[in-house]
Image 1: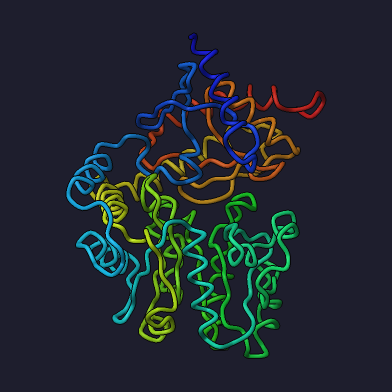
Image 2 (image 1 turned 90 degrees about the vertical axis):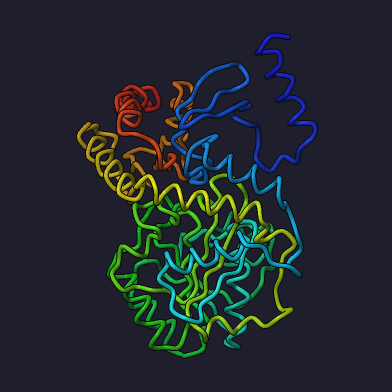
Length: 404
C-alpha cells in the first residue's frame, strides 16, 4: 500500500468511526520531533500551533518522554482517595511560581474546560447569584464553561445553559463598574489574552481595573490562563506582566502537561481555598501521577533552559520581522511572547492557513481576519524566519485578486 493509499484509508476510517464534530481532518499526522511533524504521506511541517498552545516543549522532548515513562513504570494511576509525590510536588511548584500566599491551594483536572468548571463552582459557593464574563470570551465547551463563553454559535444549540452569567464589554471599565455596582456578583471571569477572539490582549489598565473593582465589590477575579499560562507569553502566567496583580482564582491546562492531558485550578488565599468543601467537587483522573510528572518535566525544562527569556526575545523578534515585511494585508501583530495574532486587512485567514499548510507550515485562523501563531516554546528565531520569509507569497496566494 502506498503512502497516499494509506492516508486515504485512514481518512475514510476516521469519517466512519468518529463523531463529525471536527469536520474533515486537514491531514493525518504520523509523528513529531522537536518543532516538526510529519504526515502519513511523509511530508514535513513546521508546527507553529503546537496543538493550540499545548506542546510547550515541542514533540517527543526527551525530558518529557523520560518523566512520563519513568512514572508510568512506577505508579500510573491511583484514585484521589490517595496522594502521590508528583501530585504534591506539582501543586507546590504552581503555588511557588504564582507567588500564592499562605493558605492557597491547587485542584487538578484533565483539561482547561474542567478547570473552568471547577472555578465556576467555586464562584457559586460564594452564594452570590451573578457571574460576569467578557464579550469575545472562550472558556470551554462543557455546559458550565460554555455558559461563560460569549460566542452565540457555540451557545445557542445547547441552551438553556446554566444561568446567572452576564457578559460585559471587554475593555470597558465603566460597563464593568456598573455591572458590579449592585454588590451581588460572585466573580468575573477573564482571559488576559483572548485567544479565540483573535489573540486580543486586555490592556494592563483594564486588568488593574478588574482587580480593583472586583475587590471593591467583594467579587472574585478568576483569570483563565489556559492558553496563556506556563511561559507562553514570556511570563509564567500572562497576568504577571502587570506588577502586583494577583487573581483570586487562576485556571491552567494546555502547556502545563506539554501534550499530556492535565488542568489545574489555583486558589489564592485561605478565604477562596475554603469555598469548596470536602465532597463538593472531584475527579477520577485529575492529578494522576503520570500527568503530574509531565507537568513537573515541562516546568523543570522551562526553568533549566531559560525558556521564559527565550520566548520573550524570539517573540519580540518575530513581531518585528512580521511588521517589517510592510505587506499591505498585514494590519497589526497582536499578543505577547509566542502567542501572536497577525491581524489582516481582508477576511482571508482561513485561505491563508490552508496555503500555509500546503507550504509546510501549521498555523490557525481563529477568525476570518486573524492568523494565530502559538509554536512550541523551544522554537528558534531561525526556524521562525523560514515562515516569515514565506509569508508574503502565502498572502499573495490567499488574497482575492485585487486585494494584495
